[in-house]
Amino acid sequence: MITINVTTRDGDRQQIDGQEGSALMEMLRDAGLGVDGTCGGMCSCGSCHVYIASETTLPKPSEDEADMLEGMGSIVEVRPSSRLSCQIILKPELDGLEVEIAPQF
Ligand code: FES
Image (cartoon, rainbow, N blue to C red; front, side):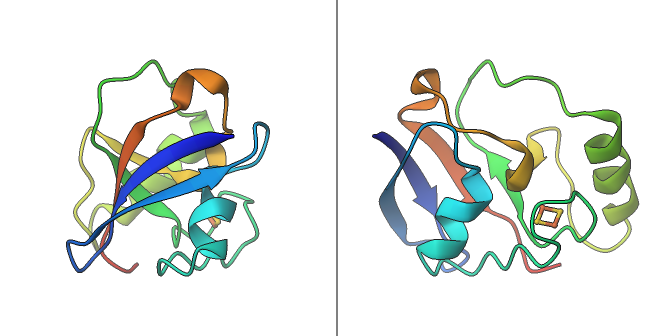
């Protein structure tokens, strides 16, 4: 089990647990934290946008993810820590990851 520390859009802090190999978006969506995952993880909707609050060694965004984030920048605040949570696959080294859910896109 991998535990993620989440700050919601309301500023509440919650801990949620997920299985290795599942997408962070699925955890956030299934926990009812306001992440829709509208495109089902195809990197094409932006509804799973999060800010990664902790120092971590996440793989760099793919070209598709980077392009999507760049395109979102005129509508929502995109930070250097911005990621699409559908592209983050849970691994043991992500246990304790700090994530803030970005404003609705
Ligand atoms: S679920 Fe659509 S971009 Fe992540």
